Length: 364
Image (cartoon, rainbow, N blue to C red):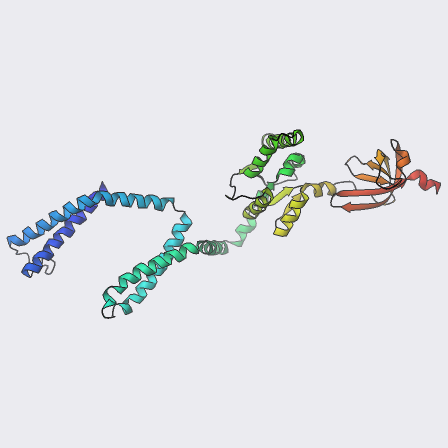
């Protein structure tokens, strides 16, 4: 109602001014032309009153549509992202400033000089707004860089590093060792579980294949255990980037956006992250790093459980799962024996130890 009253008041004032102009045109005087001349005839006041009434009536008729139009404009402006409003407003301001600088020279042109300034104001304002909207990312980046450059260096150094985000992928959740690692305190910071990873886990848990279904349910149980039993901060990231794509590519984009590290045991994802410049914490690499170091010449006790690929070879395993290839161990399958380590091979799949029976070494 307040806006409607303002419109009616403007209509009343403009109508009175129009009545004054009509009287001035017919009688040659106007109240706006002299501040001290207040002696007027009855026809003058009648013209001003008639103009004011007509202006009030017109404003009353147009007030409703005008208020509705302003409300719709305000609602549409409120729905526009802040960065769009800021970039568009900045561009329009620049365009209007250029138009204002050019108007003194353009207004002196004969003929079109009276119309051209208004046309320039509309044209330059619109062009500036469009350019600002098209360059909103650059404008946002410029101001972000400006704010970061003004931040005191000490403040950046004082930021605690333990708030770094660790983004879990599907494979490392299903694997389950991440819960034990978090319990020991070797993983610091915030564990980020993307919603698209949860959706993939749910899809695996609902699979008709029994093995996949068990793997998916195991992953969901591991997440529930991490959230409820472990003293670690867990965040569910809900943004899906509004685009189709593989889970691995979304993980890389999320790691770049959060400046975090991807926690995985997927060899292919590990390589993709390295190519994209994203830091990776590979559970398999950690497991290989903490395995006991076995040097050539050491003696260990193993149980040969099956034959190897090559003729005469036997296969044994350490408690941590490290495979031992025993040369000439095929004849000792099922028995526990001492072997002498001959060499150690580190591969992407893990560590492999080559050995030979100690009995054969003594026989030589």
